[in-house]
Image 1 (spheres, helix red, strand yellow):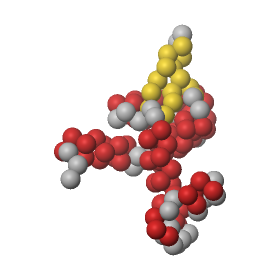
Image 2 (cartoon, helix red, strand yellow; image 1 turned 90 degrees about the vertical axis):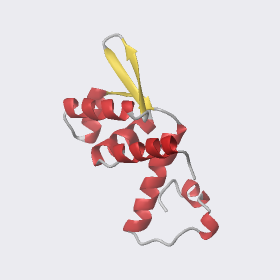
Image 3 (cartoon, helix red, strand yellow; image 1 turned 45 degrees about the horizontal axis):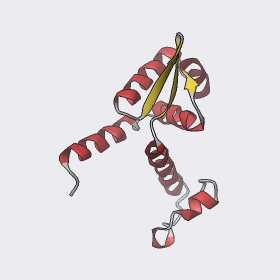
Image 4 (cartoon, one colour; image 1 turned 60 degrees about the vertical axis):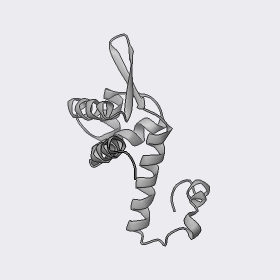
Length: 117
């Protein structure tokens, strides 16, 4: 059984991912570093809303900010964020398209297919 603190932090990460705009923001950040203004345009939300989402994601340890002058550039916190989001999206794709589970739990098909199956 995992430690209580580990379970709490994992639950908090999932809670932060329970918003479509935050998922889009994280997906965009997995493509590379970005500013609030660019993220707002990419996800189709107001910059103030994106800033609020980023603040929550940063507090949850899912994104990092880097200040350059008056601008802050955001990025995904680490490779675990990429894996967490990718698996959530793969699972959603399987559910949406009623795809069968992978044989023996082999996830290599995702890498080979570019994440689509």
